[in-house]
Amino acid sequence: MAEAGGIDGPKWYAETTVAAPERAPLVQDADVDVCVIGGGLAGLTVAREIVRAGWSVVVLEAKKIAWNASGRNAGFVAPGFSERIENIIERVGLSRAKQLWALSADGVEYVRATIRETGMPGVTAADGRLIVLRRNAEDELLRHVAMMRVDFGARLDAWPTEQVREVLRSERYFQAVHLPGAFRIHPRNYALGLAAAAEQAGARIFEDTPALAMDSAGVRKRVDTPKGRVRAGHVVLAGGAHLGSVFRAVSETLLPVSSYMAVTAPLGEALGDAVRYRGSVSDTRRGGDYYRIVDGDRLLWGSGISTRISAPRGLAGSIERDIRDVYPQLGAVKIDHAWSGLMSYAVHKMPLIGEVMPGVWVTGAFGGHGINTTAMAGDVIASAIVAGDDRWRLFSAYELVWTGGAWGRAAAQILFWARRLQDAVAEGLAQRRDTARRRAVQQAAHEAAERERRATEAVQRRAAEEAARAAAEESAERFAAAQRNAAERAHQAAVQAKQPRRIADTVAAHKVELLRAARAAGGGGGGEADLGNEAGHGFETAPAGSEEKPAAPRQLSKSRRKAKRT
Ligand SMILES: Cc1cc2nc3c(=O)[nH]c(=O)nc-3n(C[C@H](O)[C@H](O)[C@H](O)COP(=O)(O)OP(=O)(O)OC[C@H]3O[C@@H](n4cnc5c(N)ncnc54)[C@H](O)[C@@H]3O)c2cc1C
Image (cartoon, rainbow, N blue to C red; front, side, top):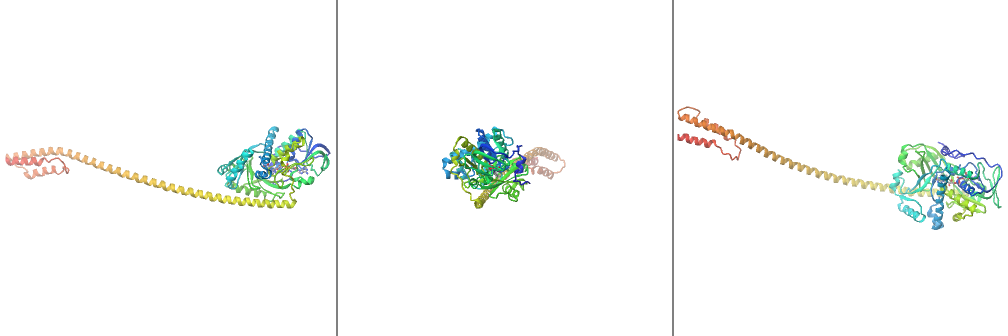
C-alpha cells in the first residue's frame, strides 16, 4: 500500500496518468501581460482563457502541474459551491444567489466543453451524481429539491429511501438528491489536458518555480522566483493552500484543510452487487464519504476533513473501516493506495474571486467543490482582465476574511469536530428510529402473516370437514345403493330359484298322485312322511314378505282331499 503525498502525487493517479512533458523552471526574466502564480486547475484555466484572448501569459508552478488537490481529488463535477445554497440565499438574497448558482453551473459546462473541444485523453467523463442522506429527512429534502427546481432551474430529482437502497445496498442511507447532469472525470488528466491546451494557445508554463515575493506597488508588478523575475501588468494569485508568503493579505485568509482518499484492491462481483450506481456518490455530512467505482471493480473512496496538513498514520485502516461501516457485506477490503490532499477554504466557505488591488487578482478557496468553480473563476477573471467583465463583483459579499492563523485553524478543527459530533448524533438517532421502524414493520408483517396463516388453516379445516361430510354421504348412498342392489339380486336369485322348485313341486305332486294312485291300486311306498319332507323343503326358502304364494301345500291338500275322496 502506497501512502504518497509527495511531489509525484498518489500512486494510483500516477499509474493512470497520461504522458505529460517535463517543464523546465524559469531561469531568466520575463515580461508578459499576465503572470499566474499556481499551476493547479484555477491557474491553468485562467491562463488558458487569457492566452486565448491573445494576451501573453506565464504560469509559475512551485512543484509540478496539478501535483496537489487538482491532481488528486475525486473528480466529481457538479454545480454549486462548498457553502450550502440556503446559507448563500441568506447572505446575498435570492436574486444574487441565483446568479451565483448560474455561474457555478457554467463552470460544469466549461469543463464538459473543454474536454470535448480539446479531445483530452484519459479523462473519460461518466454521468450522474447521488448526494445521499444518512438521516431520514424526506420533507426537508423535498422542500430543497422543489426550491432548486423552481427558483434556480436546477436539474435534480429527489429519490426516496427505497430507490436509493436499490442502487446502494446500505442501510446507512435514506433519501438522496440525484443530479443527472453532473459527471465525473479523471482530474489529473483533465489538469494536464488544460496545461497542454494553454501551451498550445501560447502560454508558457514553468515548473519547479516558486514565486517567492511580489512587488505589487507599480503599474507593472514584479514577481521574484529563485532564478528569474517576471514583470507583468496583472498578477493572478492561484496558489491555493500553498500560496505562502508571496502575498500574505490573501494567504492569511485561506484555511488549509486536508481530505483523504484511497483506492481499494479489486473487489470482484461483490462490489457490483453493493454499489449498482455508476455515477459518483457522496453523503451530506461534514467531511462525509464520497466515492465511485474505478477500473471496473475498485472503489475510489474519500472521507474526512481536517486542518492537519500531513496524512495521519493509519489512514488506510481508517478508510477501510469507513467502507465497512457503509458496506459490511464487502468484508475487510484491502486498500492498495491511500493519500491526503490539501484544499483551501475561506471562513465563509465561498470562493475568493476578484481584484484585491489594482492589477492583483485572486482565485482561490474553492474548498471541496473546486472543479466547476475553478473553471468558472478562470473564465470570469480572464474576461475581467482582458475585457473589463465585472461578473466577479457578484462575489463581493465574500471578501477576504482573516482566518485567525494557527488559532483560527485550531478553532476551525474544534468547530469541525463539534459539527461532526452533531452529525453523528443526528445519524445515530436516525438509525435508531429506522431500526425501530423496521422492527415495527417486521412485527406488523409477522402478525399479518400469523393472521393469514390462522385464516388459511380455518379455511382448510372447513374444507376438510366439508369433504369428509360429502364423502360420508356419498359412501352412505353407495352403501344403500349396494344394499338395494344386493336385495334386488337376492330377490332375483330367489325368484329364479323358485321357478325350478315349482316344477319340482309339480313333479313331486305328480309323484304323490302317482303314489296315491299306486296305493289305491294296491302298491306299497314311503307313505305320508316322505311327502311332507319333500314339500316342506321347497317353502322354507321363500323371502319374507314375498307375494309368491306357496303352491305345493294347496296342491298337497287338494291331492290329499282327492286321495281322501278316492
Ligand atoms: C482529496 C480531495 C478530493 C476532492 N474532490 C473534489 C471533487 O470530487 N470535486 C470537486 O469539485 N473538488 C474536489 N476537491 C477540491 C478541488 O480539488 C480543489 O478545490 C481544486 O483542485 C483547487 O484547485 P487550485 O488550483 O485552487 O489549488 P491546487 O490544486 O492546490 O493548486 C495550487 C497550485 O499552486 C501552486 N503554488 C502555490 N503557491 C505557489 C507559489 N508561491 N509559487 C508557485 N506555485 C505555487 C501549488 O504548488 C499548486 O500546484 C477535492 C480536494 C481534495 C483534496
